[in-house]
Length: 165
Image (cartoon, rainbow, N blue to C red):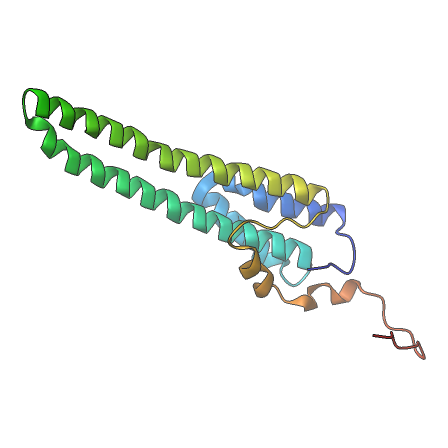
């Protein structure tokens, strides 16, 4: 998506703040939503970046909460197999510890990935560049109306020649 004009400094700062609010979990998602709702008719750049940040945070929360639920379920189900004594008990206990540690890395890794992507998005926004998150970029582009920046475009000149296509 091309923007008719380069975003000005306040627009770039608002877009970067919307990306950085990912670091504050649910309150950050609510504040990024406020930025999107207040700026969606004023600036297409801020609207698109804030909308992406909200969608990215929503996706991140869903993935992390599902991974934590899977971790808890695996831990609860693994406890029953570790009551045996001898070699089977040691194997069951070792597999429980290994599976819990392995599953613990999924929400931690997902959180690091989502935070890093948000920081990259904030830096790109401060530079005035378009940043698109993986998986949700097209959805955010479709949800932002192109009429947001019409007030910033110069009026068409009378008797101007039509562009040749």
